[in-house]
Image 1: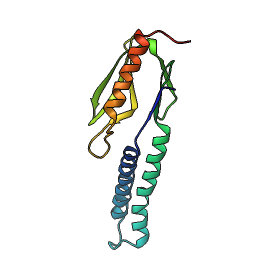
Image 2: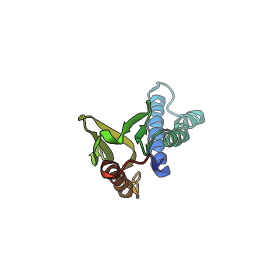
Image 3: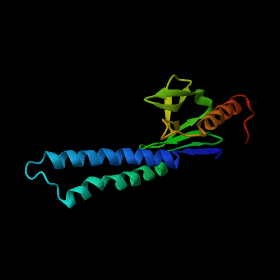
Image 4: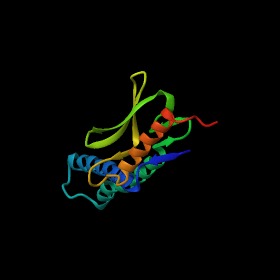
Length: 153
């Protein structure tokens, strides 16, 4: 293995807090939509706040699950589905592209297909990766080495 990329801990934490905040919002909307007493009991507030730590745990699990691995044979990527393997001889170009407020690594294959990698990525101020450019340069260097270099057996 030449390199392995995962979400940074900060990216995983921010992602988990987003999920937890969304869950808390849904519980709060449901709790306030139920007709009856307007004074919410303590149990409802526990139910409203419970998704936050659960979201953080989901973010940590996402960090462990989502990865991109570069080795001598090619690129292995995994998000939530099966692993995807692309050998170096099928890689045409590696670029950084903006998608929905994030900068992602996009791998263009010689047959015209693309592979959008989930890690590494650079997001906004809270979920940015300070080493994203270094990781992107490493992708390019490894691609060039396998394109023009001598294969090692």
